[in-house]
Image 1: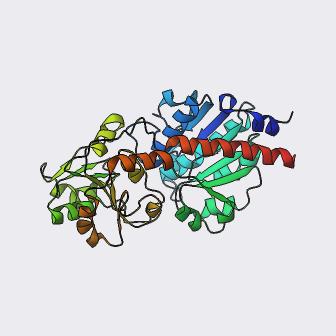
Image 2: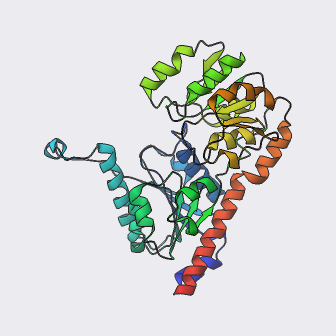
Image 3: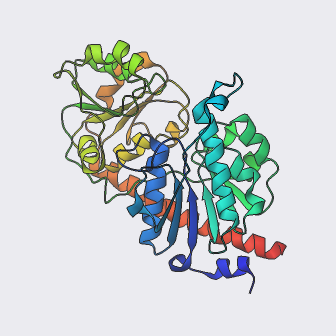
Length: 369
């Protein structure tokens, strides 16, 4: 029996999946961002189904979320190389090194059934033919030029997914090959909460996530607001966020993880999602909805695929409309919001879809052999 056909016939208990994570931050709580959270949750759920997971990730990643952790190598250059005026930034060299190393490592392995790639780099896609196992690449961001160009050369042993229909359309040269799979949230981790009388905002404190818009809306409405997330841009935070944090009307709760984050959502009256860019998906919105907490969001990127006005939240076109929209979520049915999220945004639905994709890819490859 061929490799591909044997994979198509396996169930989840027999699958051996290599997951390639983004290289910049560890896959560990508290998560630096949505991609790290996604990869962690995917690995955990695949393992719960009985699959064997090999995770390629940055140093400091959680070893308990996989069966085998392969850590990207550290960057080491001579003083002469660093002094070269054409030397790229360290993070650029680190990402090149990480994915070149990962693909060379995978080339030597015969125990992997499928590679699930979540990197933002073109090397895994470009070098996929070196690896025995077929590859699924999930697109988490708008197109990067090198990755988009390389993806157009991918053969039938590679398939692509996107986290939203909006994002798939942005990858216009590849959209005919993309299947949309919304990110999923674990309903056991993000439980239905009782609500509360404060507003919530969650995310990286950066200009593109724009917590200052949530602060402005809360102040205009005279409502208390709690912020949570890592301070990823200290200058922005110092100028536009922390001057308004007084511990009373505006409170900063820090960088939360696990039960603390779920409780943060669950004890809030609504979550404000205020991106100043076209958010590819909106994991914060999905997590909030899983806790039964409605979402007040700017109608940008993939958020309209999650937020249904009058059902689980409100969408507005401009930041100036956020304050008035807050009142519109009063009285929305929290248990109903939670129930719908379990049906549409559960990690189990997401993993079911990916397992089917793994087998479908194997069947297609088998027919081509």
